[in-house]
Amino acid sequence: MTEARRIAFSRLALKPEEFGRLLPREFFDLIEGWEWRERDEWHKRAWLAATIINGVGFRNTAVTIDDLIGEKKPPELKSGDQLRADWELLKSRSHGKRTNRLRSRPSAARR
Image (cartoon, rainbow, N blue to C red; front, side, top):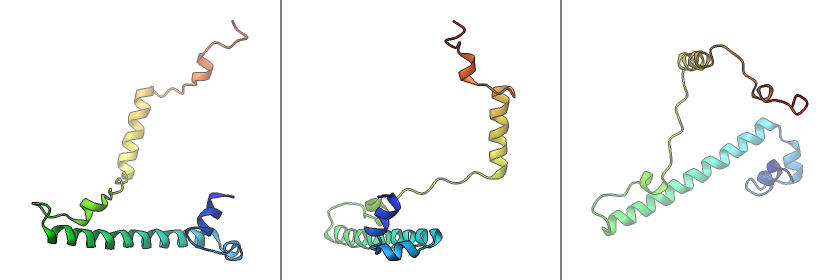
């Protein structure tokens, strides 16, 4: 069973006929919707937990939803200019030479 079928039949609760009729884009849209619903549920639970923790006064400082969930922000994408600068830096370090490490080792025939 492929990973796509596992996701379709477990998380998305699709039937085999429904899965077979989906276009790839539709399938990925369904996965994205499922992930959004899951994140939303975790935020609701974290809000409730933060409300209880802050209301009872277990801590001196208030607990936030981010403290409980601990979601990391996705890394920022580099701009085209930054990618070009990185590329030029890599080229300058290799002095414009293409290296093939496999050819630099002596082969068994040459020994």
